[in-house]
Length: 186
Image (cartoon, rainbow, N blue to C red):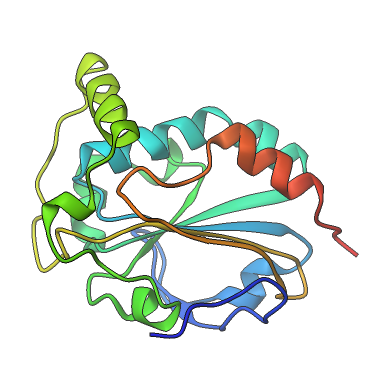
C-alpha cells in the first residue's frame, strides 16, 4: 500500500454517510480545511471516545474554517441505529468494505498487540469511566485496523499526514485545531 505524504494531492473519492449517498471529497473540501480521520469502526469504544472528543470541540473547529470527516469501517444502518444526523456535527463516512482505507494506504495491524499501547489503555479506561460500551464490530470490519490522520487544504493538498502505530495514535482535538491554524483557506 502506498502511503500519502505531505504535499501530495489527496486522492478524490465518492463516499456515503449514514444519512446521504454519493458525496464527493473534493466538493466537500470546497473552501474549508479538512481533518480526514480514519478510525476502526463505530462500535469500538476507543473510536466512540475519540469521536465524542471531536464533537465536543466541533464549534471551535468550525470557527477555524475547518471540518472533520471520520472514515469508519461501519455500515450506515448500524450508525443510524445509534444516533441521528442532528446528534452528529461531524461527517461520518461509511467504508465497510475498507476501500477508502486501502486507497489512502491505511493498514491494519497483524495481531491485537499491534493495537495496544499505554495511551490506548488509558483511553480505554476513560471510555469505561464514561460508560462508553464496545458495541462490537457488527460486520466485516478489520478488528486490528490502525488509524490515520490527514489535514487537507481546500485545494486538496495534504498538509499533514500521520499513520498510526497503535489504536490510540491520533492527534488530540487541541492538536488538530493547532494543525489547522497553519493551513491557508486561499
